[in-house]
Length: 125
Image 1 (cartoon, helix red, strand yellow):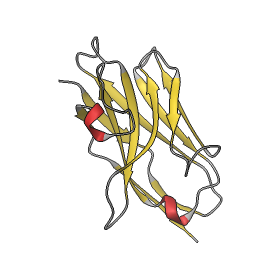
Image 2 (cartoon, rainbow, N blue to C red; image 1 turned 60 degrees about the vertical axis):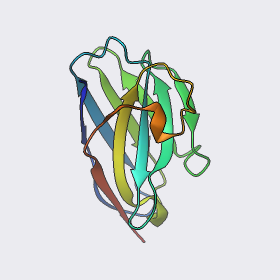
Image 3 (cartoon, rainbow, N blue to C red; image 1 turned 90 degrees about the vertical axis):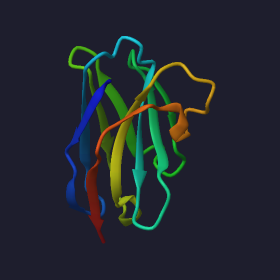
Image 4 (cartoon, one colour; image 1 turned 180 degrees about the horizontal axis):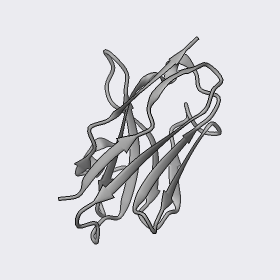
């Protein structure tokens, strides 16, 4: 089982930047992609961004496109999410996830079978 540990969350002001990291350990040989999701209070978990395990970005949610950048340090098996121009509506618990090849849409939680515990991002106005 792949273990994922997120870090880098915190309290920032609107317009600030923040970088989240997700360290992966364990058997990642059959991992095909990784993604970031987020869940705000009272809302469903939503897709943020996805990247192949080899480091090619695949998709961004419309709400973050142009502001967030997903990347992967292949040498360290670490996923990153650079978040710029943060808005109060970006406030959520951010989760990283990994999964193997799938026929599910990469924007759906069902495409991923390993999840971290999340890191809180709070953006004040």
